Amino acid sequence: MLKRFIFAFLAFIGLIVPAAFALALLMAPPTPAAPLEQPGCGRNLADANAGVAALQARVKSLGAARGPEICNATRLYFLEVVKARAVTALCKTGPERERELGRLDADVEHINEAIAARCG
Image (cartoon, rainbow, N blue to C red; front, side):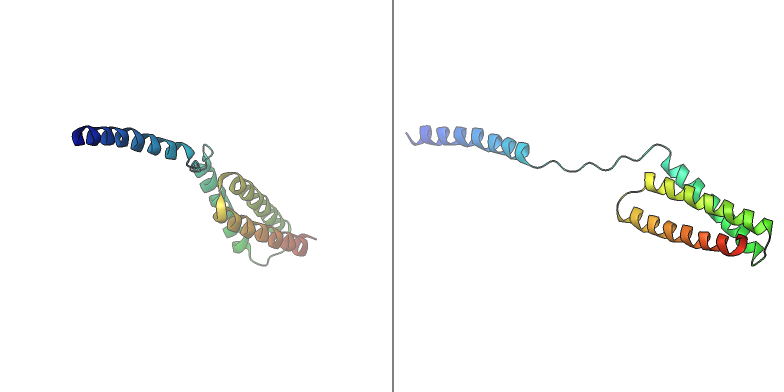
């Protein structure tokens, strides 16, 4: 009689434990998927940052000069920063995205002020 009870008990446990585990897996909330990166984002971000750096260097090399050359360089710099902001908005996520967008927005505002002062 004891053997029969032990056999029935083990059979019962053998059925209940896997079923309970399967139900627990089914009821668990899904883990959030990693955000999908847009195709070409790495290269686009690198190109945009390189363009910003090149035009920033050009504007700095012109210094406090006045005239059409500094106005054109500053306007091109402005457009490159706006493009970099658009690429950043599309390609980055999370807190890093917000920091970068905030920095780029401040740069756009600063460049706008420089255009108004130099080219007004």
